[in-house]
Image (cartoon, rainbow, N blue to C red):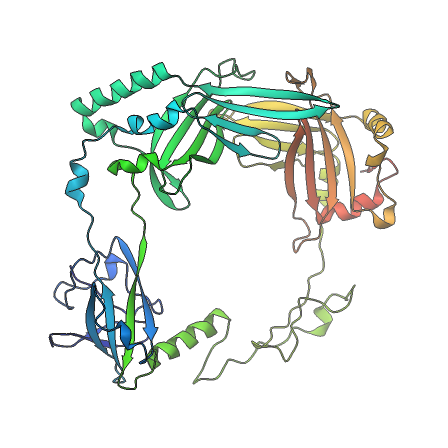
Length: 499
């Protein structure tokens, strides 16, 4: 196997310890790192061979040492290369010997199938938990998946729970036998699929937990796909939870047990080090490398070096274009003597789309939020809906609440703490939307408190939304925007805003 060592800003010459002919190496675009991309590897025979190195499987980083670190020379399990720069700087570089994984050993695996590897966990009925703002998710491996919430009412504890799926020892035994039969007849059919987690493709074993609590939206029992992935340091923890469709869930669990099977192992991108020691009074790092790093640093900070001098700053914006300061100096303005050279900017005047504000207050312009299976829509003064867009374009809609001024005023009477503050220090107002779709959990219609909050932004028309469910079927919808700032000041004592 051949290695290509590419150094940023340096035309380096390689020489093996046996005195092979020196050859030039092209510049790389990443300072201090050896080339990892197979597309950059030059033709075979262009560079000195080093045994056991696989460019595709590993990343390499060069660590520079001064001439005093001679104890690193000729270290065991290291290969030595003499390097010479275009400025006649000399370095002795020690490269780790990397062994290639034994693929034949993996191919000849005849141990337990993946489900059998998980049996110790399933048999002891260990449970893993994932805590979220309202719900707790409990995965008792090999038994059930449950979603629950506990509330205290005086000295009593009230439990709300749903079973998202169940599993049994009988099901495990049946599926183990099916695995063995499939492996004998068609081994390729049992090759694991992968999921992407933190930019890594992870093979997983999928176990179906079915027969959960009946879903009021679909009329069918809830079901959960638990996907177990190999993680040597894992403790069977739940790393992700997702509702992929109505009452259908996917949970990802990290388990070290699967790592015993070669099909489920993940080859980590291990970073190996190349130690380069300066020789013959050479500097610790090559001069050309330092120069190119300085140029790169200048470019990242918006400077344009010309013959070693930084570029002049752009002309300052005319003073007349600047907005008047409200609370002292403008934080967006950089002092004239600051480094790097300043770019004087003017804060733009906020320009509100008056038609947008008018349509929003009238409920003609609705706001949408959410990124998961369920999204939500807010039409001011009219309604708040939770919905899912089906494949045929139709919507499955749950009404969270409708607005009535009379009901809102009655709500304020029972909840005086929700009344708006005096206009001078007011930053938000709350509106009560009620009479939504019936909720089976509480045997009452859904309701939502909409909080209109003043929040400054670079874009005067920007809007952000969030939806919380602090109690079953009782929601809080936050609407934050610079547009709201004017509106909350104009609200009356009940927080109502006229169009």
